Image (cartoon, rainbow, N blue to C red; front, side):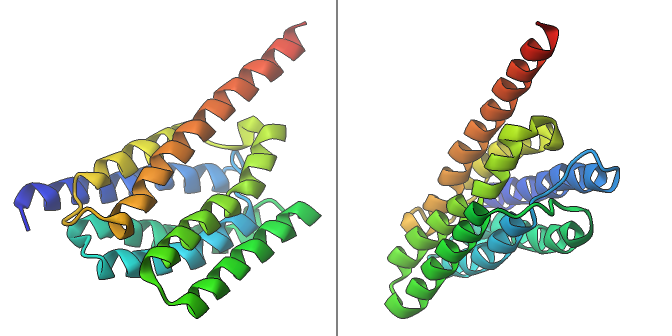
Length: 197
């Protein structure tokens, strides 16, 4: 494995802990309120995604997914005390769809389809956070989501092998986090304009 891939992966892992360190700090200061269901779904699916990346030969490029998995599990437990407690029928639907996708993965036992289902599960699991951020855009840390998009982009360059098992997860999260960051910016401006008028 080339040394530069290890260095890139270590930088991406450090950025994960820096970004989510800010996120956890904001949670504890009550500036950010994570959605418990989102982090539950991400904890489950990202751990399986990491295993599939290792299986696909991601090498050091899978370290970022392992770091994200551990961080999601920690934030899930923190969110039990400090997280969003308002759970809607739509949130429950997202959780059920995610669990169905995980069940299908266990039945299908096809690594490519498994990765597609898991990435879809994580994106669906992001639904409650998107809904919450639409209504409360200041309850999320914009910096964290921008940094998350960047570090997932960086992690692509650390991958040992490039195939759907290794690439789909980071590429998806580059796009999703960039779009979520734009949503936060847009909604903050809209709410500021409404208050000013």
